[in-house]
Length: 75
Image (cartoon, rainbow, N blue to C red):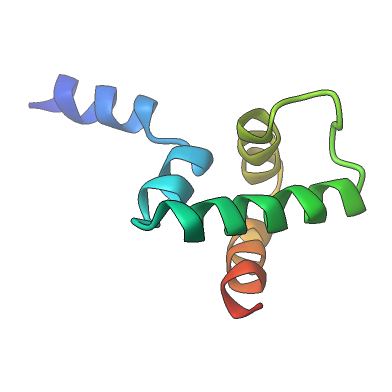
């Protein structure tokens, strides 16, 4: 059981949790565009993919990641 939990945790990252939480493809695309705009605004590793940028931001700024989700969901 513990091995399954560890594998699940390894597969769960900020990007996958973010994308999984949004069922509608149109909504998900909109939010990903908004997230990309935010990352561009703060100049977060522009040479990486949106998934890599999201995971990097969440890893380095775990507390701040919730603020970004709030920002995207409120606009």
